[in-house]
Length: 456
View 1 (cartoon, rainbow, N blue to C red):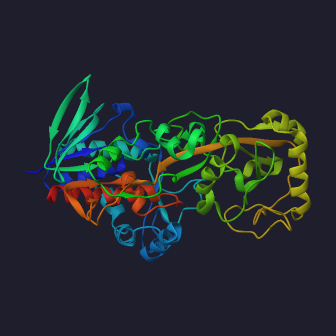
View 2 (tube, rainbow, N blue to C red):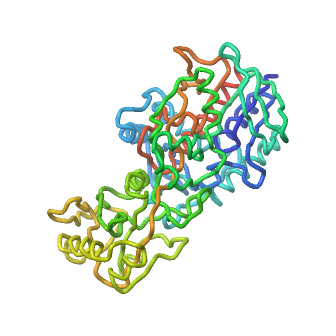
View 3 (tube, helix red, strand yellow):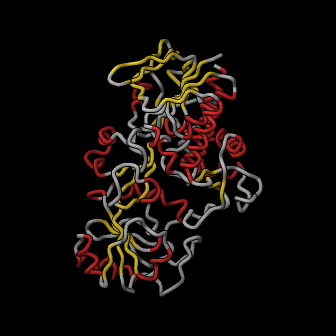
């Protein structure tokens, strides 16, 4: 019986462990976090994107694999690995049923789900419930799960993994393996690594997920000759409330006010089009945009009429009866913010309804930058401001893989080393993001890596 070691206890690692066990392997899963924080970034998720030819009780219509593939290609702008992109689209049609067989349960989409009722399945109880279900499945399958298990090195000789080295209570422990699956996430929680590419700005970033994704396993794979993929300056980042925690704010600190109003920087000036496209396609560009601004901070400004059109925030917005008072509350120049709002209003159309689920064509005229849709005047008090900061979800820099998720090295592949989840997502994702696609890639790559490791 082959002995497979899986490093990482999030969605991708859990799928790999279940898949390897299904194939008859003896499996040990090493989760760096304590049991109450198990699951990595996956515990903050809500859904995954699937391919399907018709709707059902949880999906409002068809989303064929060809459309998913086209969306992925457009998202990557031609920079992704075509073979891996095709593979994800192909496997996305069968992954939901496989997940159900291993404990996943679904629910209908709720308000504030980015209009994803056709394309995405939502987890009953959210990502934490999915993770708990998977751990129960691992227990029933007899998988050896170890918590607080920090892997500090890989024992690799001539392209073959022989084992891993754990840091255990100040000492070291070796665990031998016949095959190794690495699903330990990216390096988004390593601010020093981010600062190598972003400079001091990186220390102003919020990290939406686990503090354990410090890139140590990526670093060790690179040291053993793994081929790199993806730009280290790029990541999936969204606008989050600047008052949220440094780590583990999750999905609840995300703010959806941007298309409903305008966004200004610390000087009180607009700097981008807030209405380019419907929110599911554009929400993930705003983290990077704000990261490029002074002090890595911005503010979404709306008036009373838009307050109920957005998801209820975790933190109450700043509020004032005047724009000048709002500026004083957020520390922005009052004359500058007042001028920005006045200029925007002068170039925006007269009052219209607000439907953020569809492009409405209400655009500014002769304004730079424009607002291409939902360009509604900000003129009815009280006025509200939401402080924004980049919230990093995961990095795109990782290792190259083949269609079995075997890690590539120097024109060939490692004999028995596989990667799944964030560690290999850069083969498909290069800059933008589609809601739920990270869980899709993690589930598919995990299943394939587990099967490959068991067979190796």
